[in-house]
Length: 387
Ligand SMILES: [Zn+2]
Image (tube, rainbow, N blue to C red; front, side, top):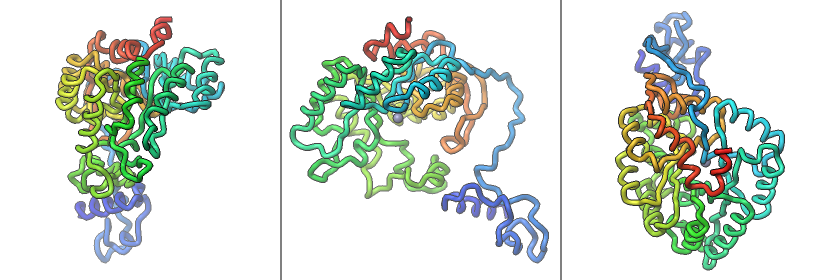
């Protein structure tokens, strides 16, 4: 009976109706679920959905909430309006102050007039030091001469106040087509002037390539991201329609190798947070590579000892990034990085159905992760944080 329950709940999930069966269904009323065949009794409890099963933990251990980061934080991967209005900035800064977030990098990025307006909106505000802009490039319809033109515009944008390039979105590699209709490869030589110009201008490039590995795999009950894919089927990248995870990673790494003077920051740990040894090998090979922590906290929190070792070993290569700006989610990061707490909740049940454990990072590593590495990489930030 229970197996049947779970199976039907699972089907409901896969069909996208996750909030299933708070009221008895026709099948239940007829006795197929919950009630004994032939009985008209209501089921004793509603058919469960996998998302409703949230057992309270009976574990009693010490808990340390961390509403505010121990050191000032630069978030290198935030998405904010371009330009941001005075009222919006006021709201964002109030939340930042509570969290000890000192600077947000608006990695939505902008170019041309929109970048100028975005930079001016910040310069004219009473919070001019609390947010910086990255430049951005649309990679659609790349053809001969595109790279040189885009690099020239990037230089104009940096003169106008942009302090980095990005976020270069996942569509680059996955979907973006060249003018001739073929897929634009991440290491297409036409784009070389952009990466070389970034190196010459001394700005970092924040790049998001691919998606979690499991999004490229068949959706079945062995898929670790099954729940998320059942909820959001469009996050899948089925074989035949999209390049494979390994192909994208290979192209991406070729790009990094081809431009050793360009500083690349892989968003989301390059989607290697589930295989830190793999990211470590890349760090060892590529001194121009850095990684930020957006959306992969659940991966770190399930391997606190390995993650601790990794953060200590590569403490000069890691940057704090969050991606979506949800003020109530930041304290989960602080708690995972700063404490040795055990078995506590993550903020989204569909990324991870497991609990997190604190990594207990030393202060020296926390400072680098939170702001010192960002100060080193992003031009003009130093006076901002020390002021
Ligand atoms: Zn992003």
